Length: 178
Image (cartoon, rainbow, N blue to C red; front, side):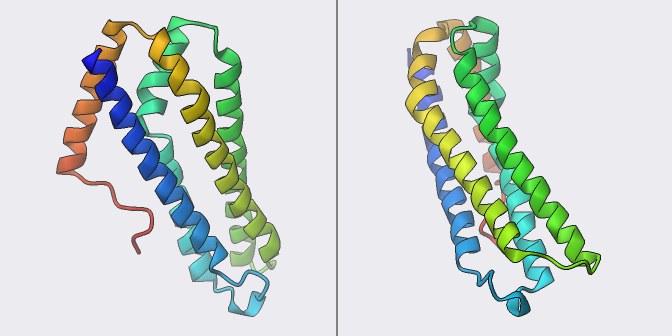
């Protein structure tokens, strides 16, 4: 029971940090004047795109992604529908990043960029991952508590503690850092 509690607390803290970073990323794009193409500096667009890529790497290296979802997949097929929804939201976000990257590449190639499309892709990315975080918190976590055995929770807790130790030694760069 203690290992499950530790793991869930670690994941809850990680969820809060992820949500905070996602909201900061969303705020970055909202603070730009995307309709004014003249003020849309290519280096600034690249910097923001890099922030999205950094965040996406962080998002997909969370404990819930690395430890919990694989453990659930091994345990049961009862929540395959929920896992498929989570995967779909991640795919939508990844497709948005691809679109952002392609639009940025076109700018580099001097073909021009439609900043409204770029902005829309960024917004879609943020909204897809925000929906995923909500589904994880409201649907996945409650189910996970019941599905995993004590041994599986122990394994997850050990991995969480190991991750936390490594983060203390090598703190991850915050997405909003410039």
